[in-house]
Every structure is written in C-alpha cells, then in structure tokens.
Length: 413
Image 1 (cartoon, rainbow, N blue to C red):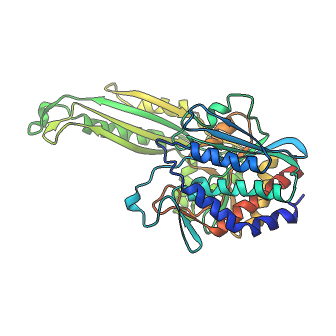
Image 2: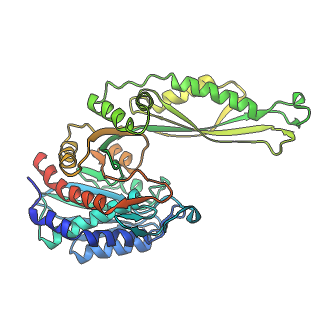
Image 3: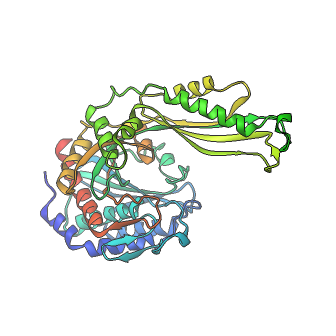
C-alpha cells in the first residue's frame, strides 16, 4: 500500500515551507538546561489545530509542555512519531553560523537542526500534506512532541507513558540515525551503569607526600582495575538477529576501525567521565571521586556490571551514588521494522543498516512499555556539534519517509 501520489507530490512541492518551518523551530532557544519549550510547543499545537487535528497538551512542568496531535486513520491501530523540542546547550562564540538558525546554500545551521528540530518539522509537514490532500492514512497517526529529553528529565515522555492515555502500537523517533554516506534504523540501544566511586586518603604537605596517602593516585589505580574487570565481561549476542549485530558493526566501521566498531557490541565500554580531588598542588589529596559511564547490550544485566565493579574495588573505595538502565531491543521482524526498512531503502540513496544505538533516549522508554520502537531519520553526523546543520534534501527525504511509513506499516499489521 504505497502512499498516494498526491501526498508525496505535496511534500515535494512544499519543500520551501518545510525549510521555513525548520528555521522557525531553530529560532526558539530551547537549550536544556533550562529547557523551556512553552512558546515552541504552543506554536506547534496551533499549527496542528489549524489543520483540523485533535490536539492535547500535557504538563508536569508548565515551562516544559508536551503536545500530542492525532490524525485519525482507517483503523485504530496507532503509529506514533515522537520528537523532542529541547536541545543540548551551545557556545555561541564557538559557532561560525547562527546557532538559532541560519541558511547557507543547501545547508540550514542551528542547534537542533539534526537533533531533532529538522525531524519535528518533517513530521509537521507530513500532517500538512495529509490535510491538504484530504488523505486518510490506513492507521491512526500520532505526533508526540515532548520536552526534557536531553537531560532525561521527568517533565517529558517518561512520566506520560506511565498513564494509559498514550499507548501506541508502534513508534518512530526522529533521532538522526544516518549521515551523508550511510543510513540506518536503530532497533535497539545499550543500557548504562553510572557509578560514583570515592576513595579516602590522608592529607599531608605536598613536599612530604610519603607522610600522607594520595587519594587521587589511589583512585586512579582503582579505576584501572575496574575498567579491566568490566571489559572482561562477556556480552552474549545470540539473543539478537545476526543482521542487527553485523549491521551495527558495519555502520560504525564507516567511521572507525572495524575491530573497534565490533568491540562496541561484544564487550562493555567504560568511560571515565569526571575525576575530582585535592585542593592545591602543594597538598596531598585527602579524598577523590570519579564518575564512570559503562554501556552494554541488553543481554548483560546492570546488576552484573555492578557486581564486577564491587569485585574490583578494595575496601577503601566505595560507590556513593549509582543509577542504571537496561538496554532495549525491537525484533527486526516486527511489522514496524520491516515497513521502515522498505521505506528507507526506497527513499535514501545510500546503504541502510539495522543496528543498535550506542546510547539511549526516549526509545528506551517506549520499548520498556512494550511498544515496538525505532529511531529513524537521515542526518549529517553533526549531532551536538559546533555548527550543527541539516540540508534541504535531508529535510525533504525525512518528510517523504515519514509520509510513506504509515502506508507501509498498514500493509503489515
């Protein structure tokens, strides 16, 4: 069941409006923190209402509202398109283009151009195309536009999913999963374990370090032991489709050495994110603290990682803070993934891989609620970077893919 030609023609003919909409979204400063999105959410709700769609705003924090717009389909089976309105911060002085939106030829610069205001604009353009061509999709389509994603806050999607008022049958999240030369569908993510490790030492004068016990030196040694112990953890790949593991390796091997790409999915990764201790160069630090970021596939329980950490730590080191999530996975044989694969291969003129994402986001929240979910958008590889940008063609391709997907999904459910 292909999308009606009238819809795809409308998308092509309204590319200038899509670019203008993206520029409008980029012009709203929604850096998180503080992550205030109210003006942008209100504008988007007004756009959907003007098209005649049912809309709703739900809030935990009034400055960070979330909008749901529903396009009724021939069936009640519901496909959700999810996008977040907040962005990571930017340093204006570091940019050579306006971080609140600037067009230069085919490129549209701005914080969020790729992550993910460009995808949100594409979603709105799909809603416009359906309304203007009086097209009823085969399934009900919901546009779920949320706040607070970039900091994993409580004001966004996670809280809403705890109610029974948002329960789609499948979900597409507009996170950028493609770059100029390669595209992909993220069908899973890695879980994380974030421990804070603290070591106590004994203060002394810096000229007489043997009179004390240097907590920073001791902590650094312990962190090395922790890293080696965690990296020895075996990561089973049998629970996952071979094509997803190989697709994950192939996708990242376009950026890094293939052996390093494979290691991302066959052993946990350990990042020393922060380390702090000491008061002055001429003092022996009496205490030190570090934060680690451990990531691994959903076949490794977070508790396994914590147990290994504790086994590697001596009695004088303690975990003072700890948080974790398990990774999640959507089977590639589900109707959503099969439909999205077909649409992506038809829309994007580059190889398309099904893969794991190395990090996690709102997809994890949906999957934990039993909703088959993918991350799916073409981008430019500039997520969170200085001079982040998208292109006119990337915007058009995303809008075409999103317009087609409900019809491909409808064939398979």
